[in-house]
Image (cartoon, rainbow, N blue to C red; front, side, top):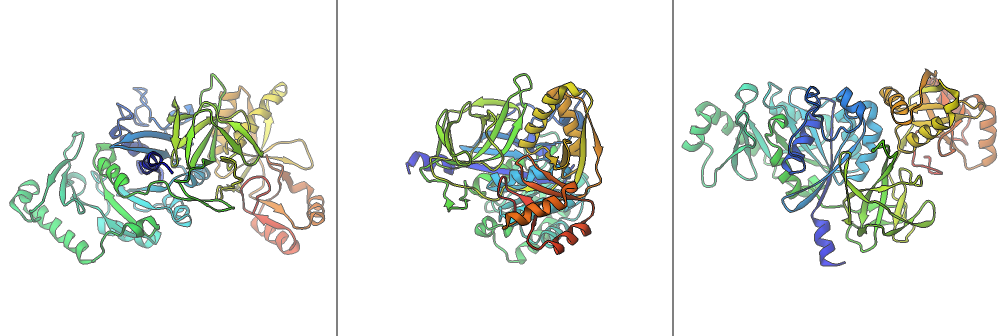
Length: 533
């Protein structure tokens, strides 16, 4: 491997932000971009009157509702490094997109509301990180408001999520009395001042926390409180263990206020200093190391109509190894043929720029003429199948009713494209020509309804179906599977990859089917054609 390639790969940091809705995730994303110089003005999801919307929220429905419903990919330089940041949907109904996104990053930043602590969606997303041993940093947000005691928050994180914490920064006061943080690793105070663009650093080299300089800055009472709290943390005896962090066993902990720009720069610096460069990736055949010469990548997201005027489709690939060059040929493993990767782009939400080269760790969008699916692998010629990019069984179902029958062809195109990008799953019943939609969360129906009309000009309505459970069905014995499908044809559908799926109304009915049909495998997840498990 060349020295240049090794140097370029070591500069990369690829991470996602995970949180419960309303913890301030989109605001934090904006401020990270602002510090990275990627944008000049941070819009917020609330500033609708001035038409300033979050950079990461590019869909019209996101701007209208003030929520993130799809993962956005952003790329920007910072301090000699290249940051690939993915802003994930916070709403639980879009968690499937977040799960897939987490397969494409090397670390995660977990955002926690100082008043609410560890919330339901945070816990679910952390569990995905834990299963993948993804390194996680934690940022306690909204310290400029009244919230929970920092020790109680740290204790809740450790007990609820089962991960140890190491406070890199520690808050000084809270709410109206919030004065900033003490940075334990750099031994300095970072002073919070309202309406300031950045924290004001006060270096403490050679100074004790009870020195006159600190007392003059914080006051006697706050200084003594800080000293007592730092002594408690120090008395616990734990030193920062970067390997434990890389193994997913220790979370570096930071405190701040994203809306006030406080603590954001500290986070960016930690991402460069502590977070991992591109990590190895697991394929069915072998482990793929980032600094291998051979190019390899996988598709983790397909997005249609990012530019509605051109009806384009973009496949987002995570480069796993080697170097990517514009218009290079690559081996499409599933199709078994070489293809040219055209119009490679990197993104600031929907704003894009052409890419001449990229390296392991980078997220690149490539033009999709309709040949890419989520989970597809690309390589320099080797048959690699990257693992762990699941499709989850939906829990909510509806029948599609076309208002204008003359637009059936447009509807089929809309459903095919939306299913390929993972926005919805399409099922076609074995016993009729109907089309069923399946989603993980009911809000997805609203988004899909909106997009079918706005992007494809097709008016439809959805009729709720009585199903609550779906399972992909397979069997080692083809005749047994055929018998089962024939016996249960009223409840069998075929998904967009023509995989047979059984739909039932209640979990107990599924358990009964499993007991009575031991030679049939009922799978709650699928990794694409022929890979249900």
